[in-house]
Image (cartoon, rainbow, N blue to C red; front, side, top):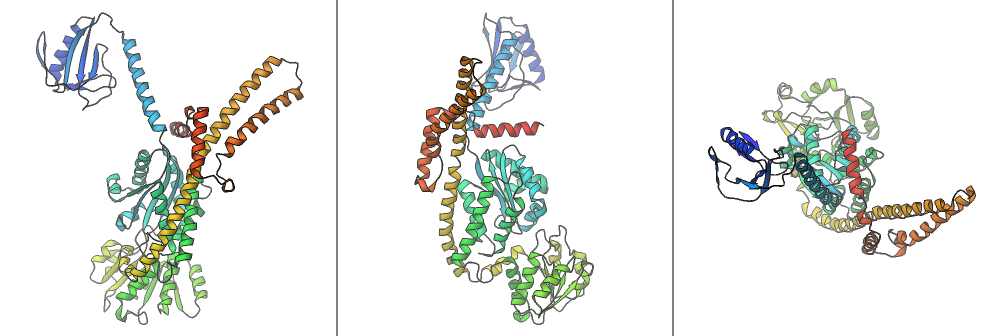
Length: 564
């Protein structure tokens, strides 16, 4: 097959034998003839075409073209016609025309592109949308968050970023220079670092933009989007994101402002609604779930093993004690953390064992809680299968992501395995009371979203402030140079300094009023609508919209960096 096409128009595909005949006829035609190739816009190709051919795009029917040597059939959507023209364009003229067309296309696209406002976007997967086996592949350890932010902000259309990765969710918050391109780049990055295909991620992900993204993070921080409604651990995790990300390039004004405001919202909701009262954490739900499954629903005669003494492990131990568990074995890499917990609960028998004794400890346990940050399973199917049988099934409560217990362990008759997705059974308890508190929390969140969006919108005036000052400075500098040129070399350094200071003073005084009316100052009593109206008026008056947009500057900067 041979493709005959023009610079940026649609292509025609001919069988090789027919195209040969056609090209012979074209090349043998008079030099003063142009051949016009009319194509439907349903197919497209960008390729070079000999200067004898011109392509016009328009729908046509099936045509038969008769050459001197016989019949030539072309694509039913295209036709070749011939037209006399005494003004033959040279190859260089046609190339120049093609380049001009390309530039026009690029300019048009760039114009549309740079008028798009940067957006807040959250690209995420949670227990609502994705199973744990997908979430665990996408999870990012705390230590890798700064690197993740740097990699995300290195993408062409991502300006700022933050990552919230917990056992129940993997959410990436970004300020994107383009919504659609930003989502595409973030999804591809997630696929690259996790090994999960883009199609699989897209099947389970959710996307929220601007106000909806803000509201979502506030709900997450308040515990309204948690598996256990109102759980307090998620607020600590949001705080940890800020703590780790602070100072990392890319965790900048807008994203850090969003997360810090989310912390304020989480605190306010818990204080005013008491939504965190009772068992409202993943760890407490895990303890409650185990209690529901064990005989007599009591920990009195149950041998308990806790694997991991980190934040989650400590919370599990705390809730076990609150449920009446007086003795337990804790396996951890070092004894330090276990010793601290033991000092806090002096009346509880807490036995420390190193990881080398993990399987041995498991063989003597009825209920095993796993809550470590290990990226590989701690309990494999063959290991659990080899453990001595109990009178009832050995219970594994795995609240780690990635999971500490291999999924195939659940296939054994001697074991029952529960993971974070199974905690929904516990969540159903006291649902009515929690939903009532959640309704109260939503009213608070609505107020806070309104306040944050007002702050975010006020940032729109910053580019106008910068452009107005730059515009005034260019005029001042130009007029100052003209003045110096007319005055000659007779002026002393002191006199020149005085004139320079005069020019700066005049500009600053003239800008003082407009600048003041663009700033958000509650003491002035101006509404956001009034400030934005002032901004648009200044843009029109001084022609600031014709300046290179801040967004365009950012895009160019990104492109330059990517080339290096």
